[in-house]
Image (tube, rainbow over all chains, first blue to last red; front, side, top):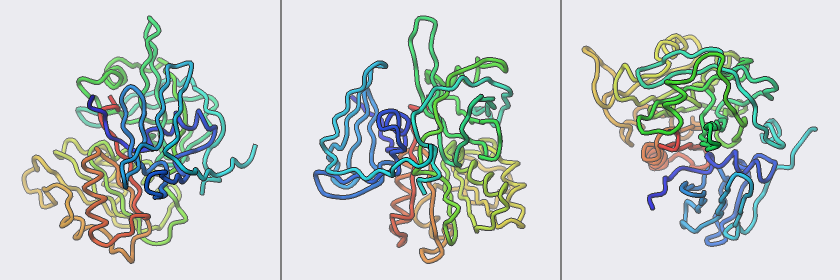
Length: 89
Length: 250
């Protein structure tokens, strides 16, 4: 299937729904090559679900599929994710 | 930086259309009144959700065009002929109608006014929308951050916000707008008439030592060509923020 290539910015809404935090500024480390990038800067392929890939080695970082009532998240390609703790109320 | 971002659980807002105005033959700006809107940062976007009578839902992301100092939310939507959502927004929607918006979302591709040095904005087609929110915020704050916008369009009539950009770049506010028209040019055009490549960037972009941040938004191949061109000219990849869009905007 021809998935459309975008970037992590396009996953901002879905990821914020899951993490209840702004995720595009979070820095993730690729479990494949160790590169660290803000989520907004990684590659995103959008089709039936969303697949985030490392822009350096192309390894799959995260897969997300939703059917409107449930969300399936596979993040095994991210070794670590550094999020900003929510501030304020 | 993230401290200023709007965090927490996202909710869908019911947004009422208050005005629709054409920008170009293919784009319209839709102004929404959104009760409970938490405010946004220039460069953020919203998810738009449409629900058909049979319950079928379609969701798309659109960049916010309005400046954060405006109380209403404006989206500029390009009509994609085979799109599922954009033809509804540009052709069917009327003032008084309501649609669902979720947001604002995103924090990576946002105007960061603490930046010291020159800001370089590069837009391909409707990639101008989030950059226009930045230009408008910059103007509203009377910011003096030296800012250059390089804006690639096919034709002069396809240039979104053309008159407003002309007014804002009158030479007094430190905003400089450079157009390139890649398909046809009006008679007497003395601007650029080619695609944005490394050679054009070399002429237009601030130098690596001047540049604080570059924001590049447009279709994926455009964004990648510009980002690679800037890196090839010696710019630090960490100072280049990119946002790609594609036909999912449909």
